[in-house]
Length: 145
Image 1 (cartoon, rainbow, N blue to C red):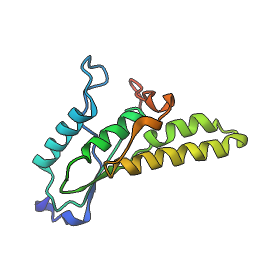
Image 2: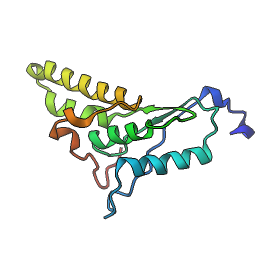
Image 3: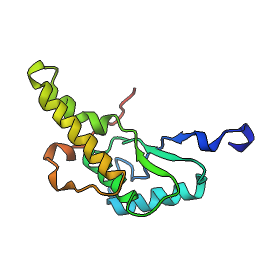
Image 4: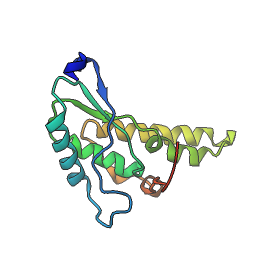
């Protein structure tokens, strides 16, 4: 990046977290995912970069939030936060279903997801209030944008 005169202080990175592949029989908890992800970032991303904004990468809403929270349990040289789409919208869209009468419930669901991830980017998320819908996976094999 230095060769291309990138101003490191002026960029944000949007990577995925280091997780086992979707077809892997090995599952990893938030602490392990945070450890591997932060180890990789510390080896490659200079502290001059102000922020790392993670994609959810097909994780469930709960997994993405818990993993982000785990990464913020220790100090980092960058602001570690989220840039999710599906991990914010999944429950919202299922709640709304395109029906005007579900608008308020969908707005409440969005506020709940945004609040959960806001707490996670501070390392203060508590999953105790999560419903079953937040743990539903969103990975779709062969999905093409």
